[in-house]
Image 1 (cartoon, rainbow, N blue to C red):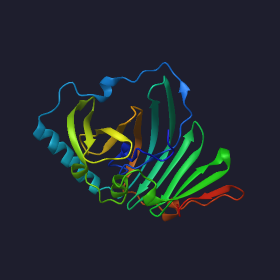
Image 2: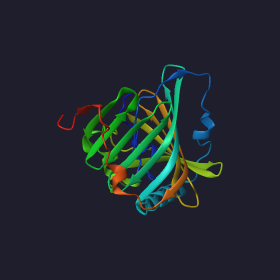
Image 3: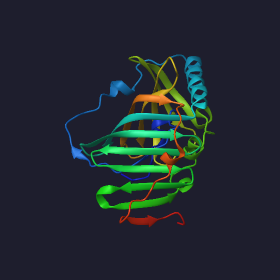
Length: 240
């Protein structure tokens, strides 16, 4: 599973979706994801689906910053293997983010909109990449910079109630790296995302849930510049 896999959609409109998912420590598991949690038996009428997507887009435009706790679950296609992780995410337009993974092993992704740092404490290693070159398509960059539009980038397939949330299923209108299909769960009161799921072209799945969300709070610029610890190996790929 690629370290910079283009799952950015996972937090699509709260984080402007972005993330770069790190490789997970996958372990055998007998747990099977409940498909019903991410499928619509009966979709809303087409007009209502379009209205819902439009409201989600409008709500995202009002988000300048976000902090939240997250849980992430990934399932590797073709194997009964899955991995789980959790941590905290900070996001600020344009292009600033900090993903702090606490379990199963500590690691961080930090971006100031120009440089992307990937820190692996267990390996005493920091990898630097150019922000705009770290994704497999241009879509993530547009959303992270705050200029992406859900309606122009995706075609809605269906939408329905999913417990207390609304579930929207979408497909990208153009090639989006490895991502083949995307599901988004939004709060019907705010139209902002609470969870997302992606499936890549190989069939692997990733699900992210957000909790304790705080929007438009003041976030210091220092949060989005990684201070490289002394003694760690530095791999600079910005010129590649």
